[in-house]
Length: 226
Ligand SMILES: Nc1ncnc2c1ncn2[C@@H]1O[C@H](COP(=O)(O)OP(=O)(O)OP(=O)(O)O)[C@@H](O)[C@H]1O
Image 1 (cartoon, rainbow, N blue to C red):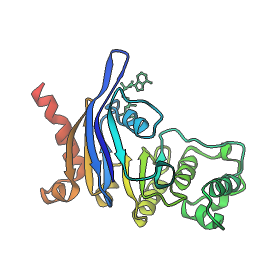
Image 2 (image 1 turned 135 degrees about the vertical axis):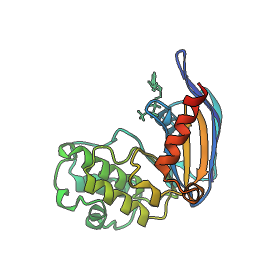
Image 3 (image 1 turned 60 degrees about the vertical axis):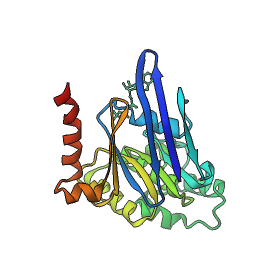
């Protein structure tokens, strides 16, 4: 459904991505993991078309506009509309007929904030609104870059529950190790600009590990070699 092949990217003399390749199949729920500075957001921004790779290709059978949803790390919101106005506007832009604005807002627990200006929402509320706008037109594949940043614990729990209820094929950059074991089907670890591991969560669990334990072990491997 989506293939990333041999992506490289440097900023001045610093090479951030050193040939990143992976495929996404329908139904995959992929956790994209890596330490700070590993290049996750750079990869995400290249996939989103916000940044140009130095080399490599991205191929997909999906329509980028209609079938792929992207939620970047920074919220791209119009701050001087009310929450309801913004969701209505986005629904119209997506040509959704008779969108149930209250129902949609309920889904991300923003119903009570419907008349509030977007600019006055808290960081966590803005993330929830961004999520809603990302999934509004029911894309087939979603990419989320640290979607729960700024959310309180309850909102984080609710966020993962909400995502679990949806049937999206997804790639999520996250550090939420407490919640992710139940959600993902695959783990992709980016380390020093390369994919260090791609592993089915089922196999990790069968080996008696949590995703966090597996991640820590993979991250330590390089340390032992160095
Ligand atoms: N526009 C830029 N100009 C110069 N260097 C950049 C730029 N964007 C990213 N970098 C560098 O590329 C490296 C990877 O950054 P990136 O944001 O992709 O990491 P990340 O894995 O998403 O980290 P985090 O978990 O902290 O979000 C970092 O060293 C960063 O300083």
